[in-house]
Amino acid sequence: METAGKLFSPELLSEIRDRFIGVDGDELSGPRLAFDSAAGALKLKTLPPLVAQENSIPGQLIHDFDPVTVRVKEIIKKGEEDLRIFLNAKDGIIYPAFAAGEVLWRITMAAVEYIPGSNIVTTNLEHPSSYDSMRRAAEKFAKAFRVAPINKKSGRVDPESILRLIDKNTSVLSVIHASNTTGSYTDIAAVCREARKIKEDLVIIIDGVQYAPHAPVDVDLWKPDAYVFGPYKITGMRGWGIGYLSERLVGKLPRNYNNYDGMPETHWRLGSRNHANYAAWSNTMDHFSWLGAHFTESKDRRELTVAAMSAIKEHMLALADLTVNGVNGVPGLNKIPGVTVYGMSEIKERTGVIIFSIDKYSAADLLGRYCQKGIHLRIRYLDPWSITPLMGMGINKPVPRMSMCHYASPAEVEKFLKVTAEFAAQDIKYEVGVALSDVDMNPAG
Image (cartoon, rainbow, N blue to C red; front, side):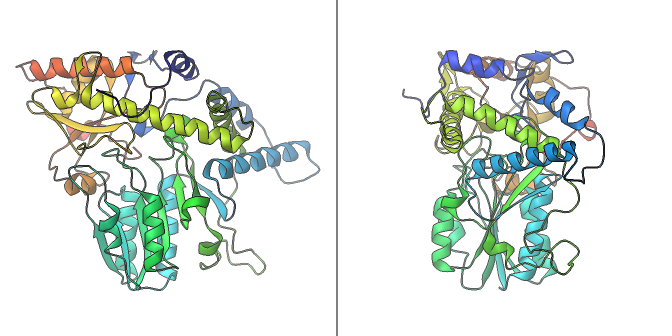
């Protein structure tokens, strides 16, 4: 059977894997298969020494005649240029913050407060950073709160279910681009295009945190008013979230920096920036340029990035297909008795995130058991971080989630499937010696 997507060649995949720290394990865990990338990708080997070097720079970076200040400003300028290249942001502003969730909350609360309209629209596939900020804003500013449902079979939100909730009185639409629960993509191009036919000046906010690591981003093409992502899911840089805000949106919102006379309306950043974060992002873009050069002869950094992300998208889709349908004669999750896969009725337009269960085990049992086999997964609990999409899918229990990044291999999928089949065939229930309350649920992922 033909596989969806297209895997990297074995030779290229080997080179990719060699660029990351701990791809086969680490000193603490021992040999380890990292299928928890949605909670944070592995780090490039070039990242820690670079960040350590930049964070060691002393002093107050104030004076333009100071060589250190000049260097730091150049790094920040280059990093912001690389953020624009990655997003294809030809206008608007780049807004950095502590985390992508912080960016989403701030943009959402401001937009709902100041953009006229009587209702706002989102979906129940959302991460709480977008769903809860929309719900809270609706309560605070007396807006009708409209929620488009998940298609339980495909694990995605159909554009039609979103569009039917939008009318001339809708002020803000907040939509997730890819789910960190089901792995499915939302057709953002169609949603943005068709929603604006209903209301031309509708404000559209996109949560791209799970999408951005795995496919090309193009805000100039899609024309959202805000697009948010987190570098930690791409090559491991935590403590930093990035938002793109269109000039149109920023122009409609009040200044957010102490409102001094003369302060430009585009100044959303509060406080000083850590230039090491910008250096780290340029390092990530160097990685994409290296990868993209295997698929295009162009030397243009945007074209190299698009080539890299397009190839990553195909590789991730192929890995998802192998996981569900099987690899090298090993049955996929859909063909292992006792295993249930959720929201995977179709293998298209999705990243390598899959939620599943094995009938005879609780999620906690499985987490411990996989860990003993050197396979690291994560649990999606019925907690504030996952309850909305899980209940939207009709799932009323915690479920394991496996998630892959572009360094994942078919051989790792094969090992995961063999271990899963082994668990499903056993009669004795494994009891992990940890209470659910003791498990680190890491809400960021």
